Length: 167
Image (cartoon, rainbow, N blue to C red):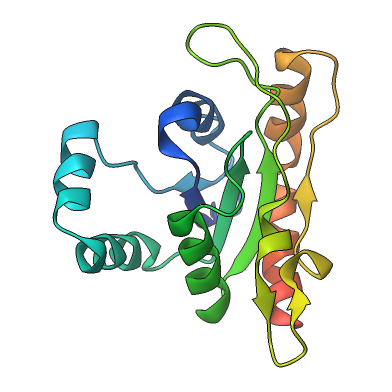
């Protein structure tokens, strides 16, 4: 059996933590453990430098960042920071839309914008979305979307690493 790739998960905490935990629990890849609410509050109260240091520590030894894209993920300060830091560190980057997964109350959300449309790279000013893929899992319900993610997340991660290695 192949070794599971270690990834960093980036997501909008409050609305998508439940959805993100569903994806992390798939087990196809090894992901970072989110900070418990009280630890995260301590980190955020400590200021931007503390947040940057926490993100840097979480990204150590990771080969890819998986951005779990919810309704309001795109163009958030720390999501953008995590994407840029990942790209600049040579990590693969991939997006997977999670708006179709049910949250803890059984609700799905509206599809959000592609977060890679908000980030330019290189001297050309091209959008990262011209290189980085953002998948919107097919399916008519939360279970079908979850099943797609479960079957394809490791493939998407490998592809993201390959894309990054070639750019």
